[in-house]
Length: 177
Length: 462
Image (cartoon, rainbow over all chains, first blue to last red):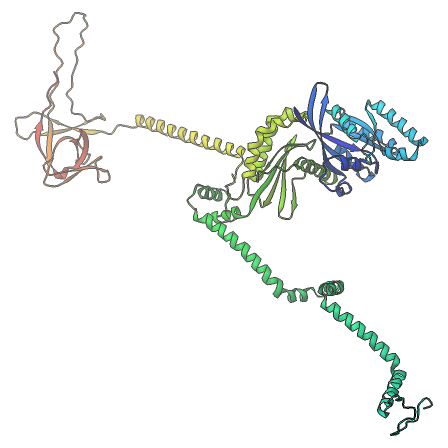
């Protein structure tokens, strides 16, 4: 079986749940304070990936990039060499979806072959809050963005773990293929 | 007082029931107590309260932890204020305590260093010591200074080979042999820190982060176009270590350039670079660090080879020049003693200067050319017999020299009566060229010690 390593970036606005996705489901050794000091924290996610006739042990080196504005300048440097990215937004805050297009543009400018997956996080809050109109719009717009980028769209919950593995797996398949 | 009963002094009561016994002293004590309460009641309360406080304080003093917790904040503030206001006085006050500790620590460190230097000096004839002396000569410092420099602590802990753009770990080597599982994360963070430093401080400049220090530990970084090398080390790296790192990273870059440019995340081809990284990891101050990079060594080797070739060419040119000068220079006339056959016992020697370099007494032969094909009875070439004079050593042990003078080296010393054939003489006739010494070689002897005598006549050639 092939053994591959790929650099993957976690992109999205502040407090959309990127770090929560990382913290609960990947091997994490560094303190979260790195995010607020240099704007990035590196973690690892291992998973076997089958793509077409290829099967590989994929090591995803996850670069969790700070979503706050002060690191926007640094982000370009951190995106270099990324094979793919999880673009994460918060289902309960529709404004966090608006900036995903910019993140995707930044990434694809630097690496046009990068694979992306659109992740609508905090689905547990949607279930608790009922079928809110704004949330439905956010979901539809997220799907539309995914369609324009030819990327999968997945709703996840870092709290319950729903679909988190699937989001990483789909991205893994895309970066290996 | 109104409440006080009249005492029945000395008389029994009629009822037979005993009355409470009140002596005058007892009654006065109660009165006094009551009076004291009236007069000092408040003070007594305060004293009681103080007594409780004193008991509490006594308990606290007995509990050291509680005491420390109370005193520490005040003490900290007091110390801080005192240091701020009287720095020099505080230093003087603390010197007797801290100074001796510092001195002891420094002394131990210097003793360790001295022991290391001493052990190096003791092995002064080892190849390493010889190499150190050569390096010292080349760098213009004394070998002891270089030994001191080499004795400084230096240990390589880990070596990372990292893809520059992605920050992915290509290879990792640890001096201890333990491969930590999170090294790929460290390589990612290291790359992030490099990117951060480059973006935050290096805008518009070509520079890059080339080392990170944390206490005594350092991370040295050497980068090529697609890959960079990070070495985690303790102490002070020796001269030439950076060059060694550069050589490794350039070698990797050159060998794997195409692979690195479009790196797909498969690090297995980099297994072959592990020995190079292990070589770096194995370097410590117990080993001699090469002072020159391989590029510098190649240049030096080339220069050495050029020097040797130039020397050979110079020798060849000199030899050719000497040969040419020899041909041009007039030949030194030598003397041949041609002895004419006479009827006298002592023939007269005629010294005839002959412009030949070979002082051989020869008979002149005149070959007759026969133009016809048919051989006829032609005169046979004849050799004019030229008798040569002989001699023998007078009653001394005589030195035979390579030339006509005392400056020439002695070939051997011959005994009295040793016979010679005299081949010639020097200009002033002070020296005779004689033959034959030992295995037929010629030599020169002083004519003062040779008795010229016998005449020998060479046999004519047939």
